[in-house]
Image (cartoon, rainbow, N blue to C red; front, side):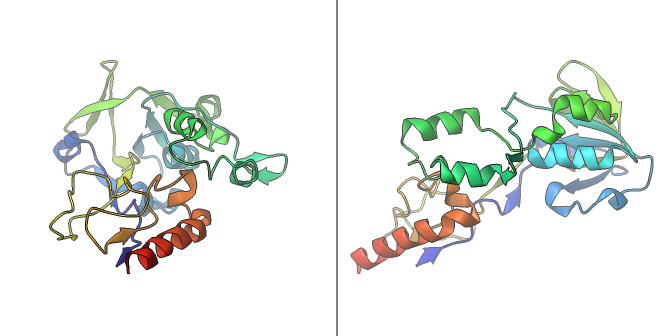
Length: 226
């Protein structure tokens, strides 16, 4: 059996999200459609400054007061370089398919760059987005930040990432606390294989453009086990 449900099925939330006032409208990044999703003039907290968080904050900026809660500093790279999408370049120079145990891949995992330079801090500030440090707690309809400041909000958009759902996998040797990507497509359960997981073999493993290569590899493993 090959599991191909991917790595990003369930949105993650900070523990304190459950404490926010019931009057505050909450959605996750995947539920956001456009600036019309919320009434004009709302105070919106966007929690998480990855690609989704920054792009959503930028889109909302003209019609709402937006507070972007940022985490660790990450490298922001351009979406387009010399007329080509950045992933085209990463593919051509081999970075996307560098083996996960290579020095190149380890550097990529450590730096974890995101292609959203068009929504960098300066661009967001110019558009009126208030840049905040990490959100650490809530009190009623206020977001509390790591520098001790607070902001009242009408809505919160959680953009803090996703995790894989393994709750449905009831196999005796599968440890749900461990990544299913550990063994390049094999798992600890005989006859059970995975594809489409983060860093299964390389950076491209969880992307559509990495499917063909990893699927061919995993099919080869299946045939070997038969």
